Amino acid sequence: EANEALAIALENERFDSHSALESKMWPRKSFKNTVKDLCGLFISIYDDKLFFIHQTARDFLIRRKQKGNWQGRFDLTRSHGTMVLICLECLSYLGHQKSLYWDRGKSPLAGYSVEYWLHHAMLAETQEDVQEGVVNFLLEQKQAFIVWGELYDRETWLEIEHTTAPALYYALSACLRNIAKLLLERGADVNTQFGEYGNALQVASRCGSKGLVELLLDRGANINAQGGTLGNALQAASY
Image 1 (cartoon, rainbow, N blue to C red):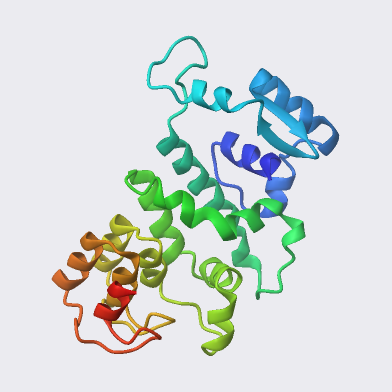
Image 2 (image 1 turned 60 degrees about the vertical axis):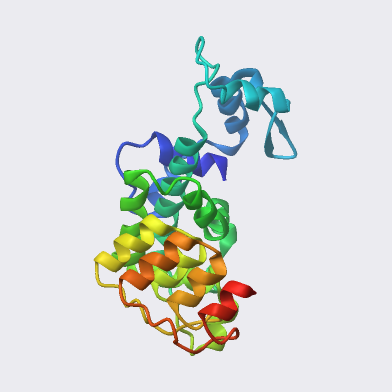
């Protein structure tokens, strides 16, 4: 995972394919030394996994006061934003895949990205480059988005006619207000019916975000719409 992520992070231009990415990755045997050279004593490697040498190392890197080459040089929001963009670039290669039977073993980072890019986005969605990257993935990279939806939300995909949920559904399920606003501005249907929670307003209500609910109501969401396992928005908010 780290080998793929670092190769993506250090490349100025996007790779055309996963094969192109692989050509820029470090040999497995030498990658440990590469990590040690880049990170010094902050990172330890055990059982092919990376760890901070101690919790105090992490605290040192994210301190508000900057000093020297390392102290305070990491911003958590920016770091999560970087991870979002790395994950989405990795997922963009899924556009060459046909179904959820894609072999995750071919790209460990893709397996991680399927599960966790939304989490990183929740912590970095105020950044403009993150907003642009997420919206591009959800709206422009249609095949990659479909395959990601199959892998991420397999139960829903299998139950509802092998269909991936709308982009707005996923943005709301992760409480991504800024992303949801951009999707609505680009034509997303505020009253679309889909999935466990039935419609967008129910998803926002289940999320517990007043801002998201107000956004949808301002855009014409039907407050009395029925559907999903919880019935309506009021029941979703009370759940």
